[in-house]
Length: 156
Length: 300
Picture 1: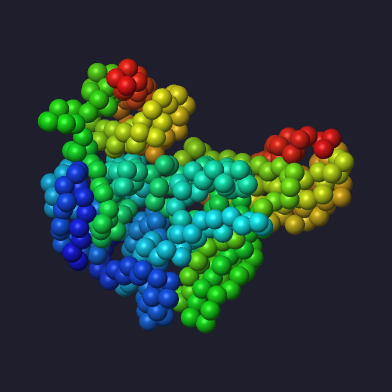
Picture 2: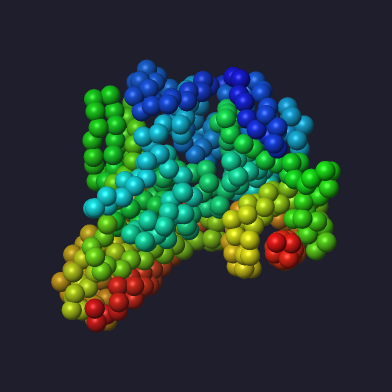
């Protein structure tokens, strides 16, 4: 089936099979391997991408379902080849160890900060509870989101 | 075959995808394919089952582009919620938060933000999970299920909609189009409590209480519990016991004593039946206490 959608700011027209998942379209066909296959059942959040600006699980969405919609992945962040402030904050606070969960966390954190620019620690933990990290223990991830929020505040 | 049963990276079989733009079109497709077809809403349960080949529908009918199923609006008596409305939209609705705080509380407790961005209210109800949080809240609010089929539409009390785990009244050619949720009586207080292993998990037990007191006497009482029986339950015997009584410590104790006989919990990976029986009493006590506080205290 032919679908058309906006991917990281670019219109894309692709042919997909009805049983093809958005995650596999991104990773296997379009070469965007940021979103990860973790659990495949909606528990780990590693496949998180933004669909019309909201974080969703690309392993549980059919590619055909995004026809006419806007998809953003971690590859779309940052301008002019630079990193997004949230990515910078993750690096600076050591919020990354193996990195497998990181793209999912960053996309969820982007959505959180857009909706709630000054989240409390509790709000950060609540919003990110659908993203699992088996390395960091979450402490530095929470710090990273706080740091990104503080910086955005000083910029405005 | 065995490998595919546990491989959740792909959906390991082909099907035809339909995306009707009207209810009539959707009903026609369902009539044509019968039990070969399944309705796709949020997909958070359905696609997981398909990945594991627990079900292998030949046709998926995506109902998310049907405007009639995405309606959300209040009238003088209650709220109409389309079955394809996403949980996150309900959670964000200020009108629902104000007029149906119990539903807001239950929905906010469900899954992760990602899941709430995908999952729909209708999907949660049609899954007919005994632990469905939204179902428990809607039972205590005495919601009605709106069903459309080839012969027309009908309205049934939500309580009768659930038949057991994964089983509802719906025939293969029918669609749950939405629910109508009457406002609780003016001055009522409500509480939803969910006990889970983590806040992301399904409930071990969940409970919803709507309570109204007049002069310290219970005037209106609705109690629903989940994950304690094959389907979400109204605890009518306790409701009628409490109605017309003062909430004295003795009356409350007697009501809690009725819980065990009203439920039929099982042992599963989340908890034992014994634990569920014990904790159900604790949750009922807590939920009544919170509902009483929210309607202004025991003196109201």
